Amino acid sequence: MTLATRRCYEAGHRPKILVIIDETEECGRAVYFAARRAKRQGAMVAMLALTAPGDFQNWFSVGDVMREEAEAEAKGHIARHAERVREIAGVEPQQIVREGKSGEEIQALIEEDEDIALLILAAGTGTEGPGPLVTQLAGKSSGSFPIPLMIVPGHLTEAEIDTLS
Image 1 (cartoon, rainbow, N blue to C red):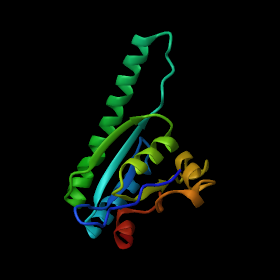
Image 2 (spheres, rainbow, N blue to C red; image 1 turned 90 degrees about the vertical axis):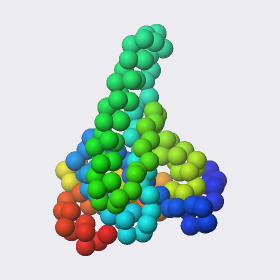
Image 3 (tube, one colour; image 1 turned 90 degrees about the horizontal axis):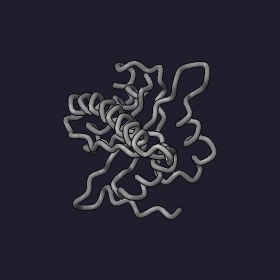
């Protein structure tokens, strides 16, 4: 995959910090860090919520209802976190909902938006590891990931994040 040139610091452009929105507790840490960093850097925040691809070839109407419900739920998650970004950074975050496999959709969005300069994720604190997205993106594909990837430890408090961002 050849990445389009990043243009986030050229005239007429503004860097964006991408944060993935989901229902995990650590998501709030990533959003908080992204908002603080955006405020400090004069950047924008792009928020991406993903819904799982449906496979309802024989039950189109059921699939449509399930797809709509998943999208509504994702929009609800984004709306809650968007309010935090507005409070902290004073910017209106870009809110994006996509259906598909997480790694593929994140890569596609980065390819499409030449102003995305950084992806921020937060690691889970449970015994099951840092979380599937952190594992996937920071694992085997990290050496070829198209932009810097920052992982916020999920145990950090807002005060600790303030000192780092």
